[in-house]
Length: 131
Image (tube, rainbow, N blue to C red; front, side, top):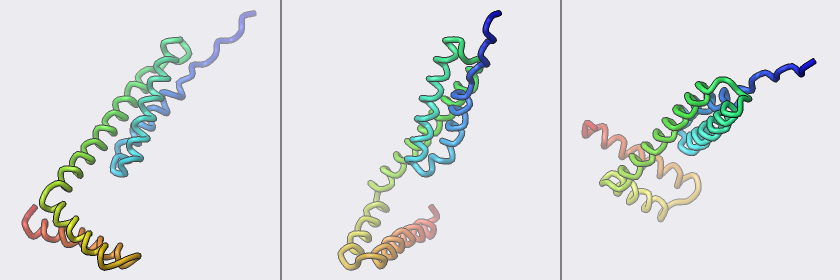
């Protein structure tokens, strides 16, 4: 009597899809988005290897997970590029000046409050300017 066939092992494809979907909202946390996106890509590659060996059947989940993970990584890259662009501009320079003055004058919680005030002041100026 032949041994029963093993059921398909599609768990990595499902995990790839879940991590890929999570990478999109987690991209706002930057590094959490990177971890989720890379995890989705790796799990997708591993699952596609299982499909090639005949151990799994659903390659579509892995492919979707890889696509979503890639989109999450691109979103993180976009946020980082925007942040770098912003900090190199005149608003970034004003924020750095404000923060340097606060660091010279304060410490501890007062410093945290002063840095938050710097950010709030720049946001208010941007709103007043219509941007």
